[in-house]
Image (tube, rainbow, N blue to C red; front, side, top):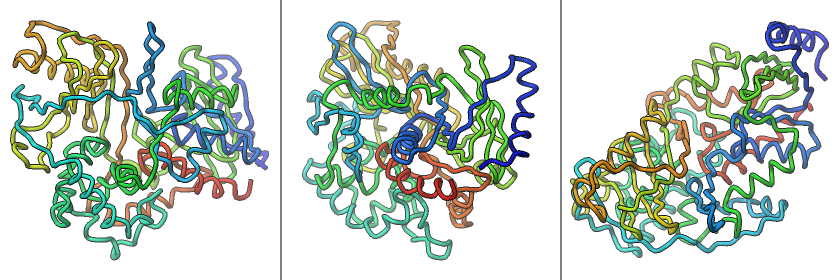
Length: 476
């Protein structure tokens, strides 16, 4: 139970806000969750429906689902998932869909495409020949055997991360060096083109962070040892629409935290709806932070010096994805960005970020999915400019169906995925960063989930939540 002193203190902090906006609503909850993406939405459902705890879920957008992005064609009703493509059948993931009566299937609806490798910096075709599919899959199977002994150290979180003197040496070497060391180069094109590209030039990233972008479950999925699935109708957004309907008024949409007080007795948050400007004061016994702990995201939270000193060490990638419409693209094509030095078969050579990774035909009229990988500071506007510049280069070099000047990309959809792929330097890992990071769990009535504490895969985040929730519930 919250102490009377804490409640009085919490309400007292709302008085300046009340003077400016009128007396705010006050909600009392067992757990307040910040962030309605994969980890936050899943945790909210489980805490409320499976453990009978009162919750409030704060989401800055007007929908749940985070990196899930489903485009619906207005003419035909056809859907295309331009964000999350599918779900790994981790643990009880399929059962979570079943509880919302959402049917799932394993079949892919993506059209067969012609891959053309092009250096987007010059527009020149790259005469790159990847390994055969059988060689790539054999390399992924071998890759899985090499990394399996380390799984509990990194997945689904860092609870068992080794002490500094026991960290495997392979964790800290560049991923390209790791693949070469174990003769896994044939697997690099598949690792990169699926999810590895999220960290940018994955050959240069420390292996342990590359494993968070393509690790155990992805390898199992690629080799048939774990299922991949998606809803049979409505796209991947269908799940989060069902969650939204289930949670109802327990979700505060278009809202962000503007002020907080966190103590060992509980937390008090001031939350503003940026559409109505309405302020709500939430007093809760526990806080679950389900957003990336960036400087911007953490500014409204009253971080202690030790919290800030730890969280500020993270660097991130910024990913952007969207759908662009222009008839000069060749339909049935997948334009993939590689440097000219990748030719003819240098499998560990990739572009540096920021860069456009690809333009990929969706099967819907003239729509192409574009993937843009940014660095820590890349913005949405910069990503769109980069996409336009890459398109201009392809157009001028004659790589598209027509050489027409001054063509503009028309954006049918756009989404920012990031910051994500949180990582720190090798020296910081050696100095006990992850031990310090996990010391934050539970301190000041606050728990942490999401990609910085686990991995950037929907169902792996759910698995991490399943292990975290019993800890949150202790003493409630």
